[in-house]
Image 1 (cartoon, helix red, strand yellow):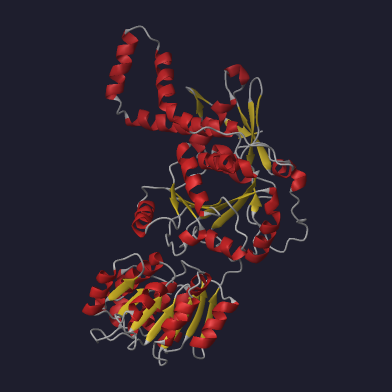
Image 2 (cartoon, helix red, strand yellow; image 1 turned 135 degrees about the vertical axis):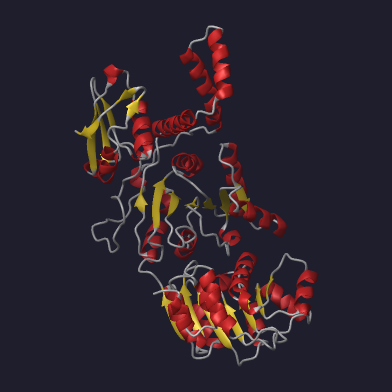
Length: 552
C-alpha cells in the first residue's frame, strides 16, 4: 500500500499533498480502519496505543469537515495534559497547512490574555485541556455552539485524572448534531459509560496487539533489596547504552531524591513532578527532548501526555501496583518501530505485582542478573581503550606529544608517562562508585512454576542475565571459545574482555566465564554471539600481539 491510499480514502487533495510532503507512506492500521468510517460521518470509539498514528487517524477527517475562514470554532479536541494538547495542535496545524486552517492549543499555565486574543482573531480548531476550556467558557470568552466535530483523545487518561465532570459540562454545551470520536489506549467501564452517553451508534475500531506491550521492547527485571535499588540502577547505567531514559518512582519526593543521587554519582538527571511550575516543567522537557538531559525521573502523573518517540530506556524504579500503569510506562519506549528496553527493579515483596503484570500484558518478563564489579571495571577499560584507539587513529595530539617529549627529555619512561596520563583521564570514574549489592534470599522469592507458561518468552531462559556465571540453564546455552594466549603471556581477564569487546562490538557484559590457563584462555559466550565473535578473528590484539580465537 502506498501514499496513494490516502487519496483513495477520498481526502481533500490539499490534505493528500500535505501528508505526502510530510513523508507518510503506508497508512497505519488505526488509520486504515478509522479514516473511512469517520469520513462517512460516523461516531467512533478507537482503541489504539500512543504512537500508532491515531492523531492523523482523527486529524485528517476532522480537517476534511472544516470550512476555512468560516466564523466560529468548528472542531474541538480534548486532551488530558498541556504537553499532549500542544503536540496534537501542532500535528493538526501541519496537516491543515495547505488549506489555511488555524489551530489553537488551550491549556492551563499559559496567560489567559494570550489565549483570549487568539480566540478573538478567530480559529477553526481548538485543542485543549478540560480545565482551561471550562474556565474560558465560564468567562464567556469561548463559544462552542458552532462546533461540528469533537474528539476525546486519551480518554482513559482524562478519566483517571478526574476530568469526567469537566468533560460532561463541556460536551453538554456543544450542539448534539455533531460527530464525536473517542480514542483511548484502554477501554474501561468508565470509558464505555462516557461513550454510551455522548456518542451516537458508534463504530468501534480496536487495534490491540496480542501482547499489550510492543514487540520491539525488551523487558527485563532485576531482583534487589529495597536499600540496594540506587546501587543496582547505577550499575545498569554503567553497562547500558542509554540515549535517553525515563525513570518512574512512586512519589514526587522520590523523583527529586533519586535525581540528586544519580547526579551525585556521575549520572546527571532531572526530576519531573507536580511541584514544578509550568515554565520549569517546559524547560525540563525541552532539555530532555533536545538531548541536553538524558535522564528524567518522573511520577506517573507528571509523565502523562509526555509524547517523545526516541526514549531508549524506561526504568521502573518502583513497580506500579496497577498493571495498566505498567503498560503505559513501558509503551513510552520502542515506539514508531524502534527497539526499546524496559527494566524493572523488583524487591522480593513485589512478586505478586509481577504476576499480575505478566497476566495482564500477556508477556513474561525475563529475569536478569546485575553486572558484577569486575564486569563494570572491564567495561570501563574497554571503553577507554576504544577512545584511545580513536585518538591514535586521528593523530590529532600535537600539543600532547610536545608534553610527552618534554617529559621524556627530563628522564621519565614512556610507560610511566602513559600510565600517569591514563590515571588523570580516568579521574571521572571516582565520581561513579560501584556500590556493593547485598545478596537476595532466594527463598523469599518464589515465582510460580513456569511449566505451564501460557505466554511465550522472547529471548533467554528464566534466571539468565548479562555477564558472569548465571546458573546451570545459562551455562548450557554457553559455547566455549579458545584464545591462544594465557597466563604465561602476561594476559589478565581484563585484557581478554577489553580486546573481545573492542574488536567485535560485543558488550563486555555479554561475555560469560573466563578461565585463564598457562598457554591459552577459555571464554564462555552465548550461542547467538559465536558467529559474530569468530567473524572478527584476525583483528583481535592484546597489546602489540595478534591473538587467535577459535571454538574450543
